[in-house]
Length: 413
Image (cartoon, rainbow, N blue to C red; front, side, top):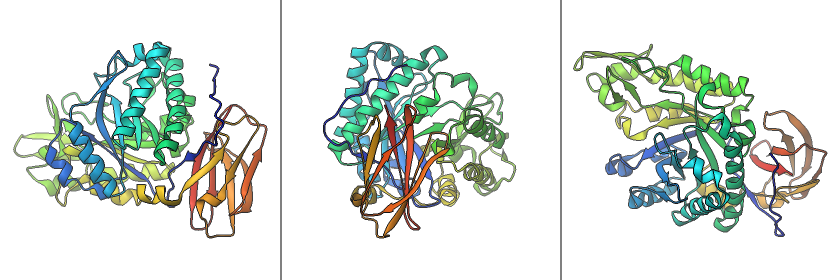
C-alpha cells in the first residue's frame, strides 16, 4: 500500500513519553457502566494509564459515550495523580461501524476529526482502538486508518502541547489478529493483548499462565513484534458454570485464600464452585514473563472487578511493574523535537529541549523489531543530524545518559 504524506512547512514536534529504567505501564480499563463510587475510591497511584470504555462509533462517523460527566471526573482525578487517560473506541459488539467508516474516505476523515475533537474537548492523552476484530481482508483498510489517525494525532500534539498515545486492543493469537499487520502496529505506541476468554466453558481456565505465555510468544516471536510494544492483558474476573464472575465477588467466601492461591484454583464455599483465578502468585508469574521479553507492561480488564482492601490485585500488578514518569513531568521538560517528521533523506534532533545535565548522550536508532541500525555519541546541548539510506517505515530513536532515557518514533517516507 502506498503512503501519501502531508507536507508541513513548520517543524513537527514529536512528543514522547519518557520512562525510568525498569518502569512498565499499568493500563486499567474503566467502564462507563460501572459504579460511580469507583471514580472516587480508585487507587489512581497504582496505574499509569486508564482506558475509558467505550466511545461507540456509528456508521455516520460520529461517536457516543454514556457518561460525559464521569469521563470529566476521571480525567481530573487521574491527571492529579499523573495518570494518563485514553478513550477506548469500539469494543466487543460495538465494532460493526469500523468497516463502513474506513471504506469511505470522507467518512473516515470525519471520524478521525471526531475522535481528535473529542480528545481535545476532554483533555485526553490518547486513543485506544478496540476494533474486534478486523479480518485478513480488512488488513489494508485497518493499516491505512491507523496511519491516517496517527499522522493527524501528531498535529494535535502540537496544539495540545503534550504527547498523545495511539494504542489498540488485540486478540491473543492468530485467529483474530490477521487484520492487524506489523506495519499497523509500528504506527502505534503499544498494543494491549487480550490474553483472556480462551476457554470459559463450565469454569474453564480462560486466562492461565499458559494462555499468557502463548499470547506473548505469538506476538513477540511468531509475529516478530518487539517487546516494547507489548502490554499483556489480565482479567479481574473468571467464569462460573454459566456466567462471568468478578474477582471481588467470587473471592468473598475467603479473600485471603483466593488471593494467595498458588495454583490459581479456588473453591468458594458459598457457591460450591471451583474457580480458576488470576491470584497473586499467578499475576506475579505473568509479570515476570513480561519482564523476560522486556515487555511494555500489563493491562487489566477491568478495574471495577477488583477488591479495594489488602487483597487488591491491582496493587500486586503495580508493585511488579514499578514506577512511571507521569504526565506532569513529561509535559515539563521532555519534549523531543525531531524534524522533519516524516522525513525523506535526513532528519535532525534538537537536544537542547531535553535539558539534560550530562555533557554527552548516546543516540541509537532501531527498526520496529528492535534491530539496532545506528549508534553514536553527541553533545547534549547540540543538534543531531541523521542522514542514512533507510527503507520506508517507522523507526525508534533512543537518547540516553546514565540517568535518563528517552524514546521516540520517526517515519521514513
